[in-house]
Image 1 (cartoon, rainbow, N blue to C red):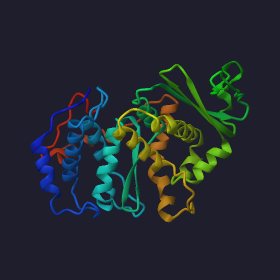
Image 2 (image 1 turned 180 degrees about the horizontal axis):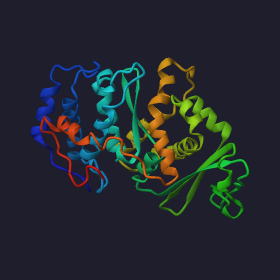
Image 3 (image 1 turned 180 degrees about the vertical axis):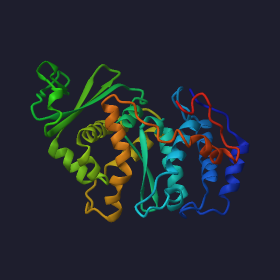
Length: 324
């Protein structure tokens, strides 16, 4: 196990003391320092029980970045989410982030408040990173399709739908034309490339059931790739031999992003405000797609805010990696 650690009894006792008499479903019941202590204790316990994280992944550093960003996020009523959301939902969203090995600093995930519940959602990059942690997946790719592009498919000898690369041509000059679909390819260790393709109509049906359909419409190409990749991933996640903890976290986060069950999609005041919460993230994601360097909007304040995160003596991040 790359990151298996021993149980930190002192940290566990500190978290237990904090939680005594606390209602985790009461918004704002824990301060940021106490939230950090409890979350660190949960991560430490999971790692001591076999949670396997990538060798290059630093859970303390990812949590530091997450808490710094959470301090700047507000809900639709302009309330800081750390006070407006329940500690239970905050801790769970952070645990989902860690279990999947995601980092806010790499724009792999972001946080949104729905009522008094905080949810962690993955970007396209985060979904790809999480899926690549599954043992049988060796490569992942997705492509948006626009008017003028030529995409051809065929059935191979195993009965799998595959991309006919000889007769497929994606022209970058068509990117300003209307989106007509998207496809994703997941390559598995048995040498098979599994193709999932969706028409624009299928994508829009998925978006209509999503809590962020306004943002998806605004950033169609990138969001279309995430939609088709999420659909492609379902079979592999649910048939994987990997840990239930990892696959469960991937499934839970996917359900946060897209709801496959029919529901009332009439936008509420809160849902209309989600676009404001996501604009900054999605713009930086679009910039990454153009190979531009994303801005770290927390670099100037990180040093001072970290003192609050660690004042109770929780896990200390590696200084060499905290800004990585």
